[in-house]
Image 1 (cartoon, rainbow, N blue to C red):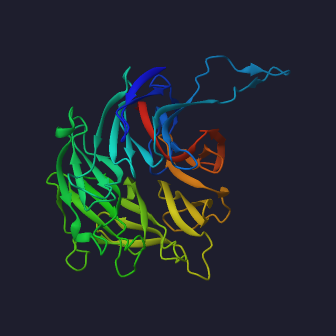
Image 2: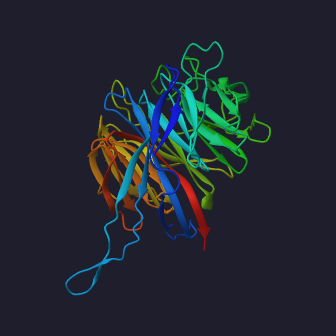
Length: 417
């Protein structure tokens, strides 16, 4: 166990404990499919968790336990495989619960969102993992910048997607001082609506372009007259690309769904997939679903419409994980903390109508480096693992004590066969 200094947003420092470093990991083979190559991969799983009242949180490491002992024989002499077990360790504590984990190489970056507005870097290979903590507030900014994503070009360049700002920060993650951290910005104020913000919620880099997903909510509510957009940025010049799809002088790509949450990329068909929840309050409006963008043409196509007031068999759709062109997963929102998990075909939009998980607060979905689906189950305070070949549970629940928020992975060793 190692003690590490950790700076809070509202205090000078405390001590937190990191329990497992890169000596432990999970090992396996990525499922063979039309979209993936066979890999032998070792990795750690990083889970951001929070308390029930959201007033505190932590980053947790989950590792599969190595077992060097031989399998046990039963009475007939047959070998009985050892039961797989996992070790869960609170790695980094925080005094607020609105946080997410972003990984890059051996590093974990904790994005402190509301009430924090900072990014903290940890090196999991170091004896003292804490590296730095920098603010992501503009000078003189009165509202919260609320960072939602950190997207890497390299060790020296990344983008911070800030929900509470109309500017993307360009930063140097290797900066040794806070003064050297911010190295530029990208102005997306053209997409702001009456509340003065475009509500940037996600980012992704594909083939030299940064895609920025913007909800464009009007006083926190989607308005069909103010469509959600995706801006496209050239990462070499940090200038916006005119996609030829925009309206009213906007250069980006207007979407056919409202209140988008996140993007998933599939390299084999050069497609971005986007989930969108539609309108929650004061009454539900089914103006969301799963849509896609062809990155060769910027054409937008509806994959799965969430329905209408009379018929919405899967509820509102607000989380998404894409494994291949024929296998994906989404969360259907029925009511607060009442969600179902579905498997579907991203090429056809066909949904398996039998949920894999029902009536749970499903707070996170993520596909690991070997192709399994990890599910953050806040109802039962843990994560589950589904084998995406069989759609059967490999682990029903790994207890994280606190409620999972998001899941990411640190690859420790990789070999392609």
